[in-house]
Amino acid sequence: MSIAADLAHRLAGNAEAVCRAYLSQGRRQGNWWVVGDVLNAPGRSLYVRLSGDRAGHWSDAATGEHGDLLDLIARNRRLDFRAAIDEARAFLAVPRPPLPSDPAPSGSPEAARRLFRLGRPIPGTMAETYLRARGILGPLRWPCLRFHPAVWHRAHAGAPSEAWPALLAAVTDHSGTITGLQRTWLAPSGRGKAPLADPRRALGSLLGNGVRFGIATEVLAAGEGIETVLALKSVLPALSMIAALSANHLAALVFPPSLARLYVVRDNDAAGRMAVESLSARGNAAGVEVRPLVPWGEDFNADLLRLGADHMLARLADQLAPEDARRFLPHRDAV
Image (cartoon, rainbow, N blue to C red):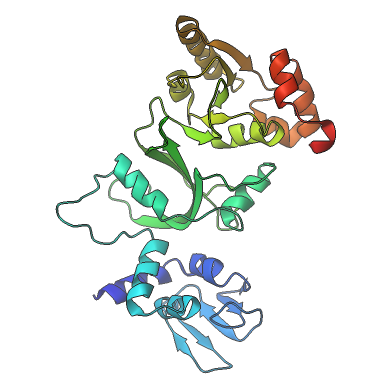
């Protein structure tokens, strides 16, 4: 099978994801995606088959044009054949064949960096839909977050790979070098995670590092999950934060050299309490004040969804140091 035929076959296996990415003005009708034309104009002239033996084939009743999804991507992006091949590879997260002397070992930091480079900013994507459905407020143009419409997922060794849209979160060290990556696979609607046994996986070097929202100075907040930290960032936008991705990684967080006070954004469970205890002991030894931020429910994302921003701020006001409350708590009319 030629490279083009192989890519067209892979695109056909993800026909709806292709249509949602390149023909977003259209909509699904039964087993078809209907839109105005290959350039994504509104209308009902162009039909794309979504499943079955003819999946990925399309035709435009107005112009008589037809083809497969590789043809569609080329016309949609106005690309020549070679550029369309590259675009399809990027969409499917199929890298260019590496040089024999330059492999990226599976699960390595370099593999994380290569996948993250294939992503795009999340505003206007299913990743934004996902985070907004989780109640996350404020802008989402964080350099540590990207979206990819089709990232491979394999349930277990020997199982077939499936492509799902994914939120990509870059894990970095203090210098800003990407050391790892978390993938959160999303449902095609974007309103929730993909229906997989493990819709979240990380790769690369995570220990001591994290997903950073803002530049750490003398005061920093650190928590476990992306959604938990972004929920807190929604109501304390001026406070720099980091998501360590798990309680164990949170407990092992490497303190920035300038750090004087660390707020531990703990989940309301035993693992969260143990992370606070570990960080408090390390903070005492390093001369860093460690203070927990404790949610009302299981975590701060749940609090934001159930209580709202104002109630979260009222609860946080009593947990911040007085000088940090004056510095980081926004005016009520700004929330």
